[in-house]
Amino acid sequence: MVAAKWRLDRIARIETQLFAEAIDHVEEYSNDPLTPDQAFAEAFERLANRGSLNVLHRMESRYARAYSRALRILLQLQRNRNKPPATSSGDEK
Image (cartoon, rainbow, N blue to C red; front, side, top):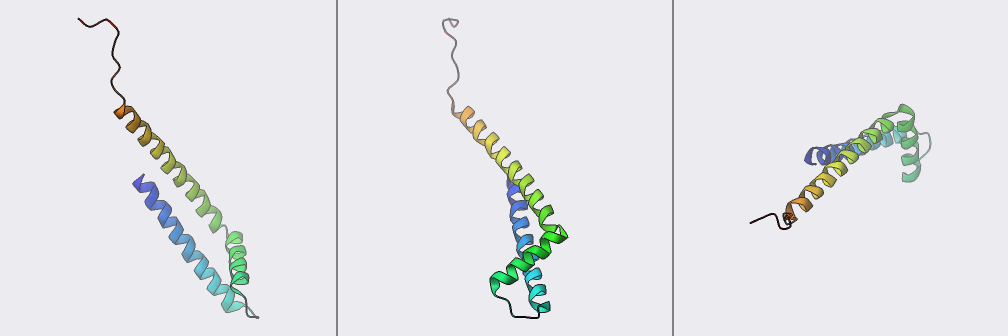
């Protein structure tokens, strides 16, 4: 779980940096002043066309599934640990 969470956090930081760089690029090479929404939209389009967002989102989905799977297993193990042991009926003397 820790590894998956660390990777998810890292992906969020990478995505933030990619957008920051793309926005800077768009604003630098734009002939007209852009609103923040326009700059973000153009940066998004630029990143989407390069495919980097697709790769990041696939990685994010993979690590989110790994985290969820590990959490589900952990919760099941905790439930099983807290169950009272099953007793056999009448076999003990």
